[in-house]
Amino acid sequence: MTHHLTPGVMAPDLCFETLGHGPYDLARDAPAGGTLVAFHRGGHCKWTRLLLKELDDRIGDFAIRGLRVVAVSCEPQKATAALQERMQLIRLPLGYGLDAEALAHAWGLFLTRDSREADALQMHIEPAQYWVLQSGEIGLSTVQTGPSLWPDATHLLQAIDTTMKFPERGRG
Image (cartoon, rainbow, N blue to C red; front, side, top):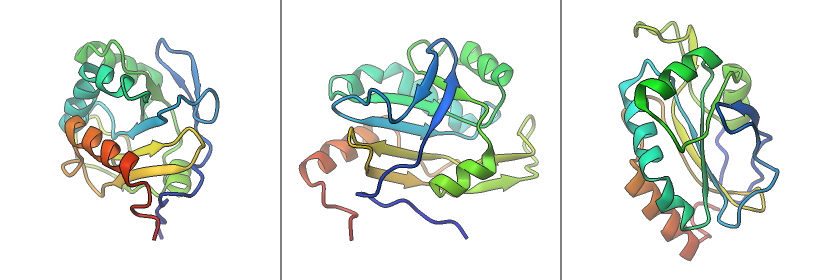
């Protein structure tokens, strides 16, 4: 059974290698505005490609709010590098190589097994975005069962702006 992380709870550990940005550790050197972590399906998915390009193009909109943005998947380094080159992602740190089942268990993500999509991993995560506060607490999250429901960068920024004003939302 999938569990979901709610605002106010501490985020699980998250460490991974990135292309051109070195090792990434969510708990280390957290910026004042926190970190938006975008878990994605991989380069086979057109929705992933659209979101990653938009996050790369709009990374400055997050930075002026004091936020760091990172994106990560379970794809291997070679596939992630091909995605980065294909989409010309320059600013967005791209992580790779995470274990899908461990990630799904820790972060409450949904998994897809045996996808019929060309070039999809045998098992991959479905998209999710988590805004993790500087304190390490979850500030906001959106977890999808499939690729076509996620918010775009404008809606993510609006949600973060609103939650900064009303941090009690979602804490039950």
